[in-house]
Length: 162
Image (cartoon, rainbow, N blue to C red; front, side, top):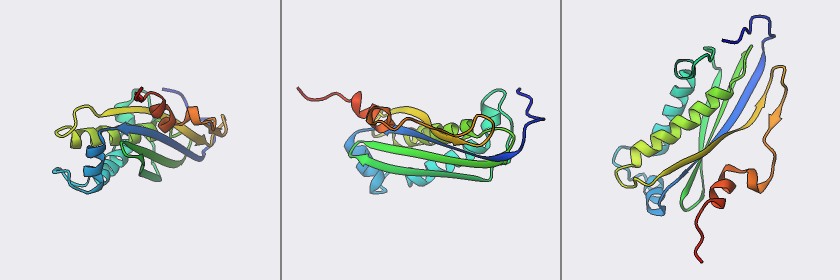
């Protein structure tokens, strides 16, 4: 484990995103709240929050952190993509990138679990860090270019009709 004992405690924030690609009918079923297991977005939001709080138990050498805020949001940029974004905040000696990435990952896995009975072809990813702030390494923001967007990357890999 990294020794953070001599580091200054600072406000730290991380934002991560992930994409879940599925059949248009599956996404519409989610949006219409017709999945038999319940409200997919609300269950996945809760799973993401719970996972962020347990990151130190899941990822070797991560420090347990007293997280101050965890938010998980969902967007539907087109008829077959669900975009998940997680923002995590803490005042501490180490960053929360892994917590944000874990929240997005587990939220996406929860979407798969809740929808697999109607769509086994659901694809998870890409998942990536969008932004982090606080600490010695300073502020990082992913380069803003359409090809760098997780949704853009998902679209780039999508088969196009000839």
